[in-house]
Length: 178
Image (cartoon, rainbow, N blue to C red; front, side, top):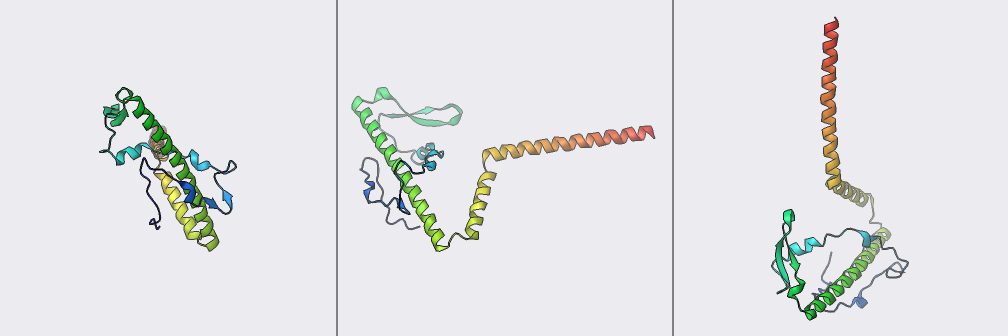
């Protein structure tokens, strides 16, 4: 994928989505009637902190222990002036708004990409097979699947050992009678 046309907007700079094409197949995905299912997906925002361990806000962040979860950065409100708190809250609000806009834009671009592939006939059986394989792999590595698989294996082992014990008992009873 060619990313040369993408621009980076670091924190503190204004983000203007006016120049972005967010319409797909004649629909406006920012209208109230649009499908926003993607907003309900779980996002692991804690993983973002792992990418930037050396960056911290002066006087605002201190490292604390979080029990068995390890350490993480926490803001101490008493260390911040009221102006700094307002600045940080304002920046947070802007970043959250930018994230929502980028989610909308990404979803619109993905829908447009799928539509173009469909029109070009690129959504062949191979693509479908690849999507199914990836989905099945994702299911197999999920925690729920692994726990259920482990429980089923334990149950099967117990069943086998119980069956073996019953068969031995029946054989012994048969020998005693005859």
